[in-house]
Amino acid sequence: MSTETSPDKLSIIIYDHTYDKVHYALVMASAAAAIGRPVTVFFTMGSCAAILATDETEKPGWADMPLSDDAATGADRDAFYKSSGIATMDELIDACVAFKVRFLVCEMGLRAKGLEETSLRPELNIEHSGVVTFLNDASKDGSMILI
Image (cartoon, rainbow, N blue to C red; front, side, top):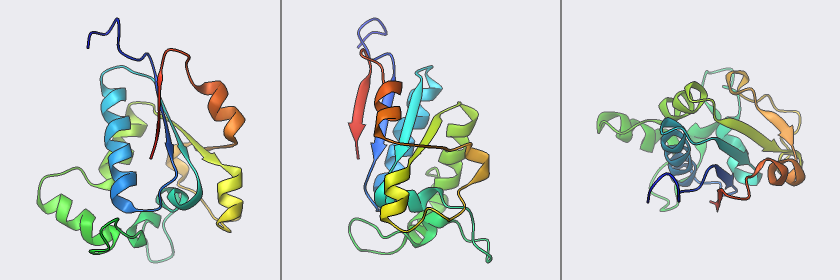
């Protein structure tokens, strides 16, 4: 697909609560941003755990996220990825920040999960928003993905 026919923007809705699906959404976001595509990632419902600030033990919010195959936790899979030379969750988040991916978090999703008073990762400059903001941000010539 040439750049003339490929989408001009990537808009990703991350709804899923599992580490591996959020991880892969960030793989797609960082890759698209690396090739110059504007990217917006909209976290809602269970995926909001991925962007929680570290707790008092310095454990990131994604560490306790389950996996879609129930094999382990996010922390376990992240350790495996690191030892295998695969980008970790924090490396992907850092790449997204470096490539200026726009991070939105759904106010309704935070409220539904009882997280509205919980601190989010400050380095992400996460914008509290809603579905209307996300849809207005999307491009008519872009791609929208739900994970």
